[in-house]
Length: 130
Image (cartoon, rainbow, N blue to C red; front, top):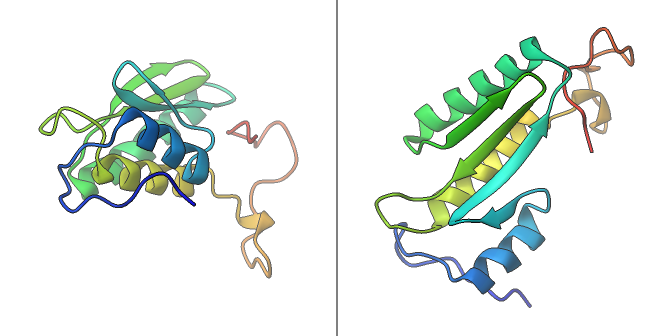
């Protein structure tokens, strides 16, 4: 049984134990460090890094919940916490889940996929999928 429960208020913060349990259950590539939940997305270069940044930017603006980003040539690190609540809340988990879902989407891997995804050719790959 999960060691966390959805909070009654969107600004109610999770304990360290709840954060770690929820990350393990829902977002295994994310981790908690220095008050933030984080994820490092590895890319194949600058153009693909910018695509990830723009995707995260769109999702964050639409959600009105804004991450801190570290951007480099071949990676983007996303950091989330709720500044108003001074901790990790349901808002952070919800945005992290949406970012993960969209950035890591591989249409060719879906059952019955109509969209085939990028060719298996290094010239066209942009993310390093785990």
